[in-house]
Image (tube, rainbow, N blue to C red):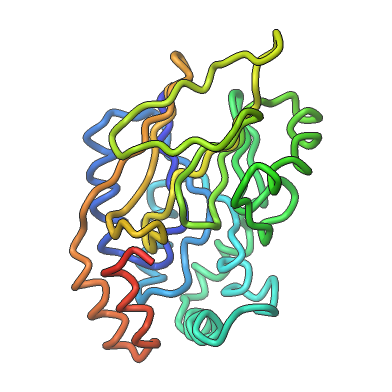
Length: 246
């Protein structure tokens, strides 16, 4: 099986369109979205519609939960709060209902898909120390691979360190340490709001036959996405950060 793993679309139709076109040309078997379909950018309904129409398995992200009223935006900064409330007011009833029904995690044969961390979509995993408390959850699931999003920064974490995967390069997720297979936590980065100083949309492809993960970056028309943000009256900063990948 070949899975395309996408995350943190954040209502960026321009980025999502380009990513979908790239994925469609790769012949993957299934697309999995790690959540935050909405928030920050100006096209939440269009992005939700694509996910729904294509039947893409989607995990509930923290912005998704706030937008549909499952959670309140406690802890959101002023800019994120403004975007969250705007999104909540502008989502269609069908998309609000769809967001409310999204699962908090999904177990596949070869991996676990979550948004923030296993059991908590609001938790950030920036380093191995953040990952450690969640190893027991993976062991209980009988799983050695977890895909997560939320930080908007691609990376691979394992027991012997943190790995950086360059764009369009592959990483072997089948390794042994001390006579046993290692666990890996993999973040494919963000489609709609990258924060690793690379403004290109990020996603990944997992081949479960070879257990290789490929990190992919694709350029998209940033100006169009930024102009939409300004046009609907969302904070200017949300438009500016797209150009910087921050």
